[in-house]
Image (tube, rainbow over all chains, first blue to last red; front, side, top):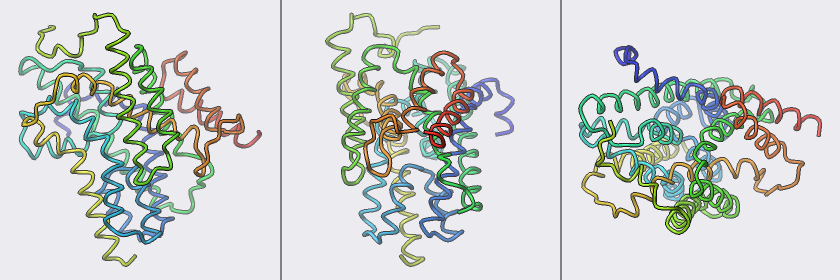
Length: 249
Length: 107
């Protein structure tokens, strides 16, 4: 990582994600506190944050652990809460298909909700030569490595501070606000705007569904409606992101 | 749950993260997605972010609150407008948390 720090693309990725890191730290802290409040021991909570590294799945699993739910139910819930990553990774993973499988596993594991949109905004197109390829890998690392460190720092702080952190302060809301700031620029075109609206409404309406299926349903319906709007109401100019073969340099 | 059971849960949750986050990175190049699906995927990140934050604005303790007695909704709207004006994420987070705290304490 020290070597990467000298590259301007790594630093550019870090700078692009830097403001959101405050929100992520606060969110990590809330998840850390939640683990302790759910009755996990110190080693269990540390193990969970370092190994699982998925805030929304952890928050979904904790009440199930407290309620002594069957282990497969907890697993299924986490799998479904995280399915949005599978969908998003289909967008970003092709850029890194040439790396070793260990690197792909690691980078995939570290690439979360915020890193995918930030990456796609900076690099909407597939790389065309070795220099561009290196740039995209470094930029991704600049997004995901600091994000991991900050999340873990926040989470461990939350675990250690435990019940000292006043939950009614709503610190986790800082994470929501960070995501809001990343979301708003993605709503600039009409299909994107309507997709976000629909996904939001579905997520609220379906929030009580078992296994947190509402989250997944919201993503799928939002995507489908955005696509439908694009096909029926948009003039055929927007081939920007689909012509991945075009050389744009 | 016993200590062993909780560690089993932690291992399985780790597996759930790895499967969902890394599967496509590892085997995705063997899968040929239809063009329309690839195009639809461009909207996946924004829809996923919306599905995460919108419920946080409207739902508190499993109740949907659309009235203005909802600090997160008011702060969320204010922060959104503020961000469109200033284009500065960190300032927006600080501003939004400020509004949230004010509304929570005084309204």
